[in-house]
Length: 448
Ligand SMILES: [Zn+2]
Image (cartoon, rainbow, N blue to C red; front, side):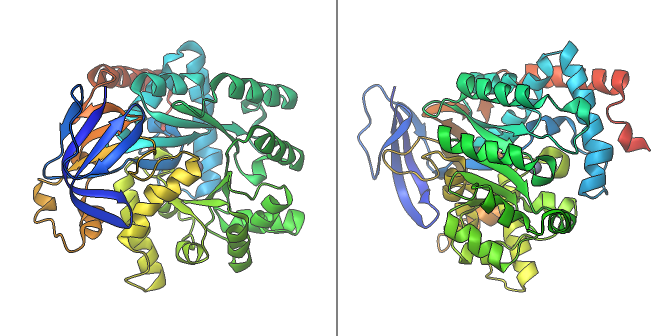
């Protein structure tokens, strides 16, 4: 059935283009037409967007969905001790818990996906602790998800690692089973970071990415210590090492890039690699400030993302866009350092490039991932027409998103998730939290 979004007060078809009183016709999973007063097909479902803004769905290009179980724990610890003392032990406990309750990964994915759909996110990339249940939730909920299959063979405690050959074969089997570029779910390769993977594994990832045309995501240069260690071990900075592995190309998303220098920015620019900026996570873990302004000036596509909930703690892309803007401005002493249009581009068009999907703009032929934002709210009125992008980016909150459409299907309408019983998921989450907390002391870090 065709879907007509009618009478949008503002249509942000891409970050640079805003038009008034527009209709959007969706046929199947793509956008069929955009214009004034389109004819309503006889069998169309109609969404009245009077008084609303309509824009491409936001794309959260870096996440660790299991961390929705780790919100609000162990604040005040920098990255490396945080991994050693908090993250790895909790991952171990969660993996043990999954052995006796396979519903756990289903549940953390459902919680995170509900949070994202409610905030207008239509696609995400999930890295780390990944299970097939995650893809099952996305298919059930009609969410566009990319599972970045995580690979490590150094530093991570041995009991959390699989044998090398087995790991590589399982990775290829997983890709064969779940990589569906024409549908809702796809698989990327994710060597977690350079210091967690040896050179042989990195060469293998580069070869598989090219052979199977797969996206690759990696955490890179998140801390100054990581760069110093790389220099000490290899004499090379992390981005230089990525280039030597043959990984710098348009398939790569390099997450963080906080501690990169001018030659590394130039290298990223000429190779076409994408950067993912996680401002709130970088601030929470005191990693530093990524050089987003020089990266964009050099022509590097930069997407913005929340990172996992343990270091954010929300999966709120509106907050993330604002954090990117404010951090860029205060760190450069330039109140015009990034524009609201830049922020929108980081959450839509450049994010779509990073996710390797034909979305991020509302144009005929593009994937129909579209959101409707209710502007009839006290904090959004009067909505100044002189600079709608400024109003939208600085004033919108996640719960202003009224309707979320993914792959041409309405998954949230009038704030109600249609594809899953949210109340049941929340009741199950309360019960699982009790089990993990009381029986397994998962959250003991809060009390020490
Ligand atoms: Zn991360």
